[in-house]
Image (cartoon, rainbow, N blue to C red; front, side, top):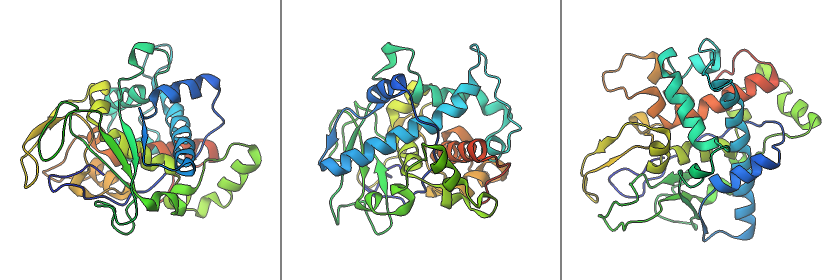
Length: 287
């Protein structure tokens, strides 16, 4: 969830699914792409977050490998996981989002997506019952509403470490994959979720993410607590963070629509659905 003008109002999220084990280079890239710091996290919480980030790195790798084949974006927009959330003409911007998170080949980009992860305590502002995480979307040079310039934070709520949808890990062994995909035809989207999806959703809200991906700047109007500011991270269309809402954004005719690639859940839900469809051999993942 992106923090609205009214300070820290957190949003319940859904999580994601799991891929094959990452190699050494993947984890080196993950270390570069991970947070600058973990704040107020216990060793157990930090280990759980690092595992979820590793899963996030793996689910975003699958589409990235197809977005860029010999430097050309050849991703098939007719694949149902893509068609649920994006238009054909969105391919280059969607590809840029995954490259911003995952490009391990360019050391100069190692700190392009910059953030800290903070573990919130029980009863923290912004962490209502059922909420998992929220993000500061302000640019790093933003000052106002009690905020000072600096690296922005993804704040993880206590529920992230207890909910099954975020404590579930992606399978690594073939045995784990078989168990994960068992009864796949009758499983719903939320039965495949993991913490990777939540973190991908949240990290995409960061202004530094949008800048790295080349997203256009949008204006957040002044509110009760914050002055107006421009930012380039993703948004939550209608302040709803569900895959159903993301599919409606793509297929509906609402007059207040944002671009599909500017919606955090569109990126996160596509990553989950594409991974599940590929690994479990499914045409569709129902909601």
